[in-house]
Image (cartoon, rainbow over all chains, first blue to last red; front, top):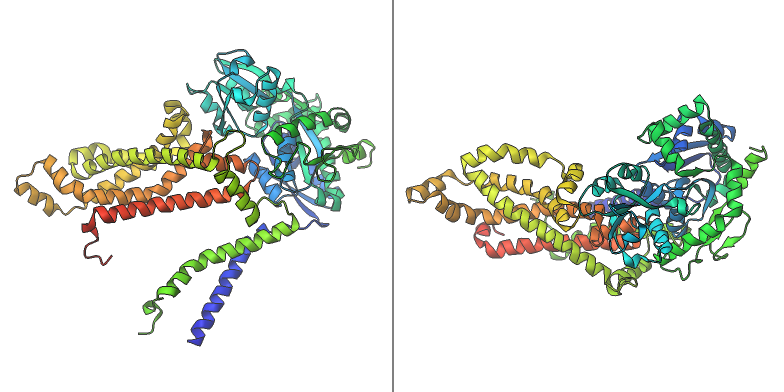
Length: 360
Length: 273
């Protein structure tokens, strides 16, 4: 009898140990100096250079220079990559400014934007079937990925014609199914981004009635790194910044080498050189550190306030948020937009300036 | 004989053993959640009880500030309507086709291979075609469930029908029954409880298709809410929703089983159940 009891206690202990092991990967790693880093990225016109940089040894070259290892992991699911970063499985991720605020920052993960890769300058489009004016959207069902930059684009567009979201019905629709959805009869208005937008606009009856070139600089696509990790490991910021602008120099060059790089990025994102260059035309890339530094000084604060207003209105800054400024956002010059006592997102041009000064 | 195979837990012990795995998972969750919250009090991945219960209160018991609706009630009704319609339609089609396929050789010759092949197509992989055919509104969501589970119900019921002892069919014929009478008096009464079994088994798949449909295009529903909340990792809302879905599914299964037991008592006769 005793032996039976003992064994059952042992079995229970073993079961607990197994369960503990199952949950162990979920524990959050404390920031510390380390040598190996993981950065997640997903397919998007402004982020394809990361794939190119990883495939062509540019990331490795810069990582070696600082004696670290950086693994670039490609995600098929953009939101999942940000969730994984927020949960602590990755040290960095490619994200829009809006999602960086709504997911990691609102989740208490202090994050730093090391490099703004680009901003959307026409990549996010409101498309109406048959109708040609934005005002015609009134009363329609609008299919879009809710709470995404598409939703933001819609909200900003409605403002320009004196409407609010109450004037339309938003229907959450998966981005993967947007093209097929548009082909059905009952769908008359969509908001989506490239390459889906280009594909839809290429078909009949599709009119671009508003795009993000009317709200330049507000939808940014950035490299986001965990602040604590970055502070403990400045080498990570240095290596990523170096690799990024080296890749930028290659792809922006009007040379056969530059065209080859753009073609490789196009093919990797499922299109070709012409298709990729068409997407680039609707994207304002920051090709040099100076571009980014200049944007950070001039337009960043105003654009950021518009985004926080949208997020607050949709409850994306967390339930505790009482105003759009609930989460503080540090600008490159050290000033803070919002609550200076609750800074959870930081823009830094420190590394771009180091590169500019020839110190990387 | 004192062997493990003969040892049975009694009353209290059985209850305790039943609860044990649930408790262990709960304990492990609480430990992991606490560890993460100690590092980052705002952690969203494994929220603590306080934020989960706040989320439940917000979603279930307070009207939404933007629409004035009770979101969880709204979502539940939307989802259950879709699920109910889908399952009822699938059951009706499955019942008729299953019995005919199991009983009538000509019918089987035409449809058997077709349903077998059809049931092998993963419906989610041909979604764009379903969209073009049925749009993206409510009918499409119901239809995805129907397309998803009907072939299974047909196949299961055809199999059960063909398992009816041939002697019974012969006997009915010697008593002068026509095909129609045999279907009505011999086959259908025996197949109804089997149909309920088939529906119970396909409920899991039905939920899967419901949630997939709601993830694609909708503005209410349990699956819609989960996928929307996932966009900003609001696990404090997602976890109660998952628990709620599990509970609903369990209740539905239990209700079907109790109905079957009450309506078809003969099935349980002699089984000691």
